[in-house]
Amino acid sequence: FHSYSKTAGFNVEAYSVGGGADYSGSVKAELQAGNMPDIFVIEGLGGYNVWKDYIADLSDTEFAKNTSVGFQVDGKTYGFPVAVEGFGLAYNKDLLEKAGIDPATLTTTSALKAAFEKLDGMKDELGIDAVVSMATSVAGGMTWVTGNQNFSAYLSCGLPYGDMTVIDQMREGKIDRDRLTAYATFVDLLFTYSDQEILLNGNYDQNVNAFATGKTVFCHQGNWIDPSLAAMKEAGQEIPAMGFIGEVMFDDQEITGLMVSAPSWYVVNSQSPNKDEAIKFLEDMVATEAGQDYMVNKAGMVPAFSNVTLEPSGDLSKDVMKAAGVGDIYSWGFGYMPDGFGQNNLGPIFELLAQKAITVDQFVDMVEAEFAQIPALLEAAQ
Image (cartoon, rainbow, N blue to C red; front, side, top):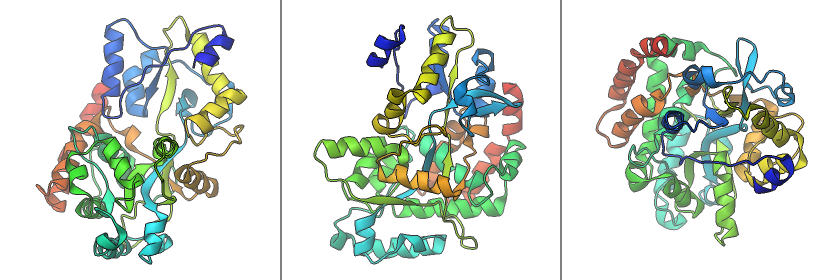
């Protein structure tokens, strides 16, 4: 942001919070300290309800007119989409080819299970430690992957984009037991064939590095790992060609699409004396060549704005852009949960399933018990 500050006429400073940290809690701490940021991030309606007294209306901005995924409430745009992101099971193309497995056939849970079994029997031949790299640890800060990102598959996978059926049911405190059981069975399959050390104790870097170095065939993450992979390549690490398959959580319905959405939104502090400058910063990120270059080439994002024509360089981001372009996508739903619910309430249940401390049926029972609290939590947030 140094070069932007020199030309904009005002200084821009960025503060980051690690992937395993409590971001909302960090912003609350800044508010208490009198250092509320000019621009901060929300992940959906839950975050909006927490911060609505500090969120400016951005409906009249140019960038709001150039995106279909701005965060809106009652027809007004309040959030600038950070990017379009997608997730699923990233795969190593060379290793699947060596194993004689066509990723296009991995569209159901049973097909995925058969592939996992075959790959597990070829560990020595393929030079892998495990079939899947995935992490669940609360201590490792990975509940944002399980309780938020992955759980969105239950809320939206296989449904028309924007379908709120399961989300509305969730907000009423209810579950679709058959659907949740199918989802939990799929998750348990991932856990069974994961590198157990990474699964139970690993952090983000270990999760990604095992896949990037060819020690696993699959990695449960999103295209947001592309910049990390690019940095590893620049440092001399050979990075495999890769692609995505979807969250194939059914046997009676083929899943070919990816979970794609704006994962979070920048919002402007309506009470900040620097509100106008903050809005200009966001406008310039979309409207200027330097801003577009930062989003796509430097940050490795898939742009959420129709006036940005640059294409990302990363394999996974290209797959997300391709899926979004043809509409083979499912929306995310975790932003409709109460603030912190996915990480704090659901995340530990995923960890128990990973530890084999509970069964699939017990996972479903425990999620159902947590869901029963949601109506009261939502009402308290209003």
